[in-house]
Image 1 (cartoon, rainbow, N blue to C red):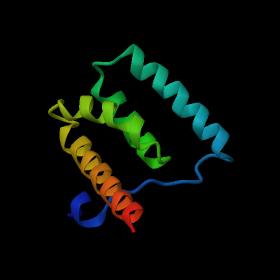
Image 2: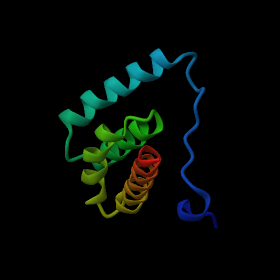
Image 3: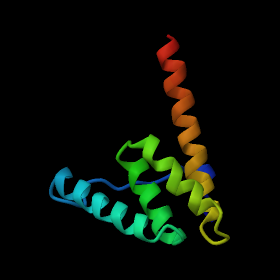
Image 4: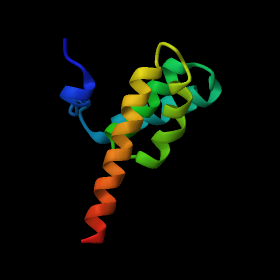
Length: 96
């Protein structure tokens, strides 16, 4: 009964012994996602991982691709909305 809109987006850190391993896994995922651009599952996973490590600019394209998929669309749209909120908060912060 939990929705992402109410509870937020969960991104667990610390699953890898260090961030170098995580970043290498994301690079591998980027390669696979580029080779399979129509695979909405890969696109969503890549976008999610990039959001989780704070790479907002590079997360947009895979999330937009995943948002076109019926199954992955709602999750991708939630992450896109999260990106919009983060950007708006940073913009407001920079104005102060």
